[in-house]
Amino acid sequence: MAEGRIVSKRITRSQKVAALPSWMHKCAYTWLIPYLDVEGRIEADVRLLKSDVFPLEDRVTPNIIEKILLELQKAGLIVLYVVNGTRYLQLVKFNENQPNLRKDRESPSKIPAPPSDHGGNCGQAPEEVRSNSGVEPEEVRAKLREVKLREVNTIAWSDEARAFIGIQAEDRKRWSEAYPAVNLDQEIAKAASWVIANPKNKKSNWPRFLNNWLKSAQDRAPAKGGGGGVYPTHTKPKQPTMRCDKCENYFKETVEYRSQQLCPGCLLTINPEVDPEIAAVLGGIGKPP
Image (cartoon, rainbow, N blue to C red):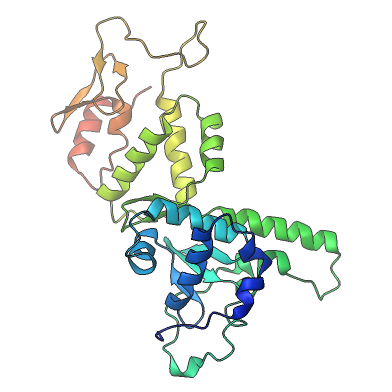
């Protein structure tokens, strides 16, 4: 990669840049440019961006960088996308703003281009796509809405952060409504622990993985009647019962597994291929009703 890139003076007259919510957003957008490869791309891992773009800014945390990236995408200045579980970003109109870039003197980009969902939009923002094929404007707008909805889905797994990234407020709201008995923070942390413990079981669709995980947690949650609603505050049931060390619910019986008392439901979340011992344990208790 070259030592730097050109920052055109037109940036000071950009309406999109001027509309960014803070100077930190504007600074982040400008500081990203020197680190882009020959095609205007870079890996969008917040930990890496923190070390490269903001190494001396202690107040700029990976969480803040994540919010900044989402704002830049919302403004149409970058495109975030995931390929094979790794998230990248593409600067919009990169080639247009680097007229003197000599691609023949730089190494080719090793970062994959945005998926076909983004069409040819690498060089322009989605809202600036124009139709030259006779398609009616309303059809173009409908297609753009579809593209934007796909771009919002940026949930991915970061090996460096050892955590899920890209979870937005809209995702949490939707999950809370769909799975009211689930503690989202706790279950997302459990899902992250499972991914860390099973590095070979990489998923191609992390949003679907999290949704299925939360659905399973909802299905395991005890539904009780009474004046407090369908899922009232948990109270200890009548004895004899045993408490599961993982989900902390009470069951008629639990099974000891590696110094823990686990219910059948939690035992089923352990992959027998990763731990053959669990197959024998499950065979002894059978599946829960």
